[in-house]
Image (cartoon, rainbow, N blue to C red; front, top):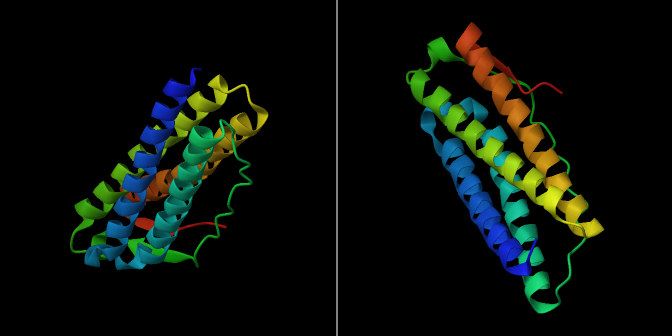
Length: 160
């Protein structure tokens, strides 16, 4: 992969992380989704962390032509909570918020996995592989939420 293409891909990834962080922060502010506020605030902070690391990578590649080390970040699940869709006055918006978050996570996971496959530098390959794995974990949490709300009208989540 050429350096120009890599930098373009990194800039797209950085923008996606910014959008994801803002989307989760806005979801946490949604008064109809107060029960899941802590989870979405944590997801927002996690994506903000990804944004900062991707920005650091971009800077390093531009200035030094080098990849940076990325050790990843653990995701601590918030306390178990329960959302009863039937009790929420705006059930559709809750499901829509989760659906949109699922699509963001799928796109980011796929983009990082594609980048990992194209990077020969061990640190770069490891970083993008790890980013894809972290986005996959977020995706699983959100898929469980969507499935549970659609099938049972309740989201007991997240599970530890």
